[in-house]
Amino acid sequence: MKCPRCDSESVSVMVKSPVGDEWEVYLCDTCKFSWRSTEGENITDPEKYDKRFKLNPEEFDKLDKIPPIPPLLKK
Amino acid sequence: MAYRDLRGFLELLESEKQLIRIKDEVMPEPDLSAIGRCAPDMESAPAVLVEKIKGYKTPLVLNVHGSWQNHALMLNLPKDTPVKDQFFRLKELWDKYPVKPVWVDRKDAPVKDTIIEEDINLFDILPLFRINEFDAGFYLSKALIVSRNPDNPDSYEEQNCGTYRIQVKGKDRVAIQPLPFHDIAVHFKKAEEKNERLPIAICLGNDPVLSFMASTPIAYVQSEYDFAGALKGEPIELVKAENSNLDIPARSEVVLEGYIEPRVREIEGPFGEFPGSYSGSRLQPIVKITKITHRRNPIFENLYLGMPWTEIDYLMALNTSIPLYDQLKRDFPEVQAVNAMYTHGIGAIVSTKSRFGGYGKAVAMRLLSTPHGMSYTKIVIIVDEFVDPFNLEQVMWALTTRVRPDKDVFKIPFAPGMPLDPSSEPAGMHTKLVIDATTPVAPDFGRDTELLGIPEGVEKWSAILRGLVKEGGSK
Image 1 (tube, rainbow over the protein chains, first blue to last red):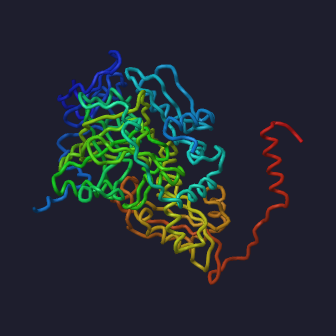
Image 2: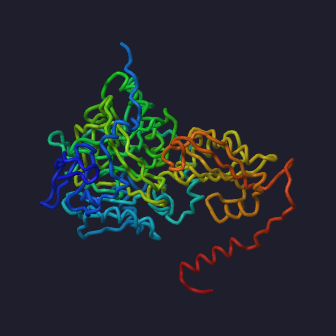
Image 3: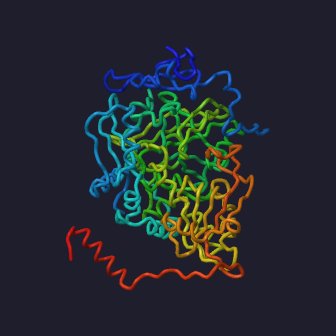
């Protein structure tokens, strides 16, 4: 299975429905996107996921850190 | 007070026909966000209790704060109380701060009915769902998050309760967004400097007054619990958390205890935010959940936020306006009321009497230098004291009949701004706009104008007409 948002193939099952066998929720280990098996193709299908919201993992390092990590205090 | 906790408030709402129940099973997506979107658009804008959600055990309530009717009932007022009257009632209660909380024994705290320490799975307790289509996952959007200053852990005054967005990233792992100007970021910075974990408690399904205060901008050393007590007119009941010395509400539905990992950042977002657009992805801290405590048969409360107005707008309306009103009133006693209800105060309207020419402009500049107004407020409109700033038709009247664009409109370029406002460029910078729609007074001057008066007997006839409408009859 591929992540619909960043196309990573590193995807795991986060959880199965607590009641019955109704759905599973998946988690992309790369971009931390999560989705439910019962959601529409606009969410679950990498080909149909809106291009404006697709992510490229190579750019993650450049994202802002919020809040910034402060320097360690000297002991 | 007519209610003690979220459950009591839901009973009150139901008795006032301000709560509806959905008994048929619904799908988590897209039904829950669609319900959250529709409810505030209805005339009565009721809370909605969804009893059965496919695959989940727990019911969900949405739109608890999402109407002026529900807001009035929260303040113990009749549900048809006008907004301006709610503003003054809130101000009256605000001035009763502080009302200190009481601490109850664990055995008397309903939130300790069930304690889960092993195999933690948030989905077992919380019916999580996608709020907006391109959110990164499932979010907790109405949590009250408690933290303390790790350098002064015994300080109750410095303990903070705030609402910060939480992305669920695992059965026991979530992300949090402490923006640098939030109080929790002060605590977290001190913990990170020492490479220590910061204990937090994520409280869900709270007394509506607590959720209201958790989204109110108050000073660092002021206590949200003491304010909530003032608004209720009686102390909030607190109890100690299991894993830390944090104080948590004893009557909340669910509390997730855990800690923020120091010096770790991981991708989070996007998430549909209060200005009605998505905020982008950033690297943000991670929280490990180590314990869940909850009431018997818990109710999950979450918040849909969309293009304004939706429920979130009621949680940053009058509570944004009152602190600004207090700060202005101190130096400008002529100020009558402040309406900073638009997108958390990015837009604000102030009514004031003018002591001398240009007074309205001075009031606007003071608003733009208050702690909240400095970064959030971008557009300020000043109107005369006889204009109700909560009545937008009256405000438009003032704009159309009082403003001289060559004299009464000015900009302050490149001032502090609100990064989540998509027009803030670069993020965190604003050019401010001031529109002074007050009537000129000396030494300024305008053309002579005489206002139209109110006919005699208006009050009497207003009561008669209201009575007739209620009875549906004739006279």
